[in-house]
Image (cartoon, rainbow, N blue to C red; front, side, top):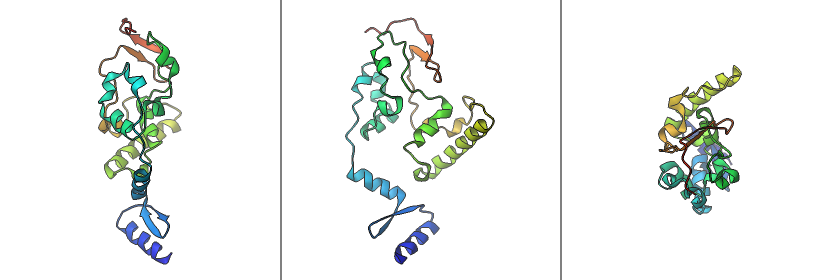
Length: 183
């Protein structure tokens, strides 16, 4: 155990971050998450139900990367059964994200200590702005902290051509191009 403390101390002084023990080994948490991934590789998620309407997400980088790692649309947006069954496409998905909710949602799986340094500083700035807004009892204004939102760098994850828009907080339909969805 003494050797483990020495290794942990030496590695911490090199800026390698927090550690966990695995048997007799001391492993950086970042490496541990990689080891866990190697031994529990997920099957790609099946988003085919969503791709019936949302074809552009089949090649969208953020959606494709998550799908390949077993994280499907449902993980972030909920099953959205009413949305799927609504042939007029007037029902919003269960979960949508205002700009101020993007980072907290991403951090649900991507914890800050394992983020690369360039992401950590952006996330910290956005989290600080969100905390200030929450302390003041207000919602963070859309566009505030624009440099600190995960999707600014990691795929837009927005529909290129919209036929409907919903209020992301209430799910209320706010705009439609007036065309049916052809179902």
